[in-house]
Image (tube, rainbow, N blue to C red; front, side, top):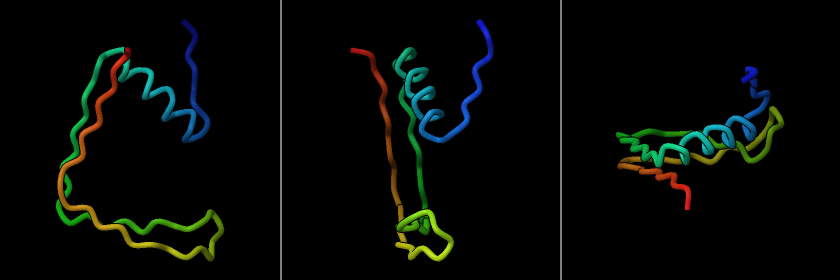
Length: 64
């Protein structure tokens, strides 16, 4: 099988999702007072929203 390299985030997310589904994987993330500045668009002068995460996020991927 030839190596396939991803070139952008959406492509990387799709490949990761496919791999997780193949394995019926579950990912769990624990956050303690994490703060993320989320831009409203991709320009340099974008406004940012502040998101705070404190808790657990679980992601399950299954083939059905």
